[in-house]
Length: 234
Image 1 (cartoon, rainbow, N blue to C red):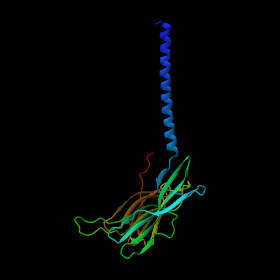
Image 2 (cartoon, rainbow, N blue to C red):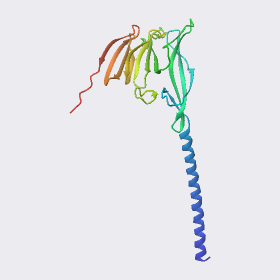
Image 3 (cartoon, rainbow, N blue to C red):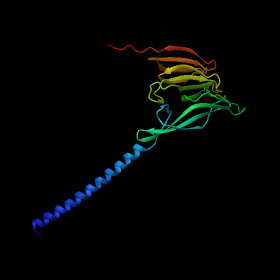
Image 4 (cartoon, one colour):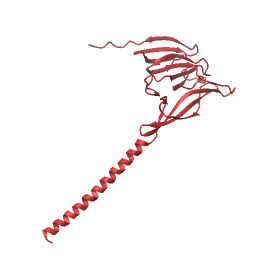
């Protein structure tokens, strides 16, 4: 075989290999683009978000979620939830959130709503149960309910969510005597139920770290103070 024929054969083989590699690369790129488009246009699910943007077209569905028992009582908490579907950039978005709570007495069948409207977002609702001394045969019994509630779009992003300032509130286990104790809270740093049934909370508000001891039976703040920060070193 002459050198010219050998060169042509090698050139054709190389061209064939390059063509196959190019087709393979194009195929990989096409698959990557398809996955990107699919991911960019899929419906994204989020929780504890309420769309309050008047310019968005929102499809809203209301339903009850799973109930939560209040320990040591005949009360169950039935959350009223919304699912909002709306356009988001090139995709859709589905947001689920708790908007109100129905208190049901499993013995008397009495019922009552926490509040008389459902515009707010309830971030958290927690039965407050004092710790029991071990060993104890007494059943744990809640002394009240503690809430984190977003009432306004404080950062003006068209959403009610964890990015907004919120209120700290309490009620009896039956939902009665609902009371907002602190408004415009920036962050809840933690809470602890004391042995006497009081609730100790630490939170940030007005650029200060504050603590409060809440008497749930009386429905009031027993003690409150601003926590001093360490001085800034020069």
